[in-house]
Length: 138
Image (tube, rainbow, N blue to C red; front, side, top):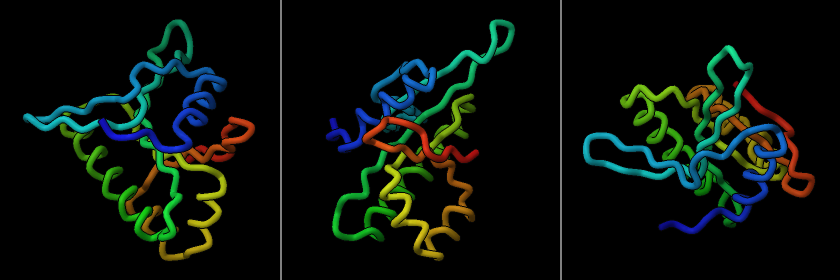
């Protein structure tokens, strides 16, 4: 089992504070004999009469000296999990969770912003100290 990212607990606590129920930690994605694990699965009931929202969250700390290497790894995992969720016709929406500091480092790089837009990566940006959502893209 892979080690949890440094901000794993902060992201998890943030989601719980925002009204989400953590359903999986980690969240297994299975397709044709392959099993991979995203960091979290969560759901939230919207209203008693309607189905709830379901998400899968891949958490990345972006702590190595190379922002680009961390971004490449996050992008690869995100795209793999996205493709497998599509193949399994999952009703879960995939998000990449990162700290506010990591997000600021990434958005300073126009090329990385362009890649996020091109691949339509859904972001969950968390203030890991206050355990609050800063940005939630859809």
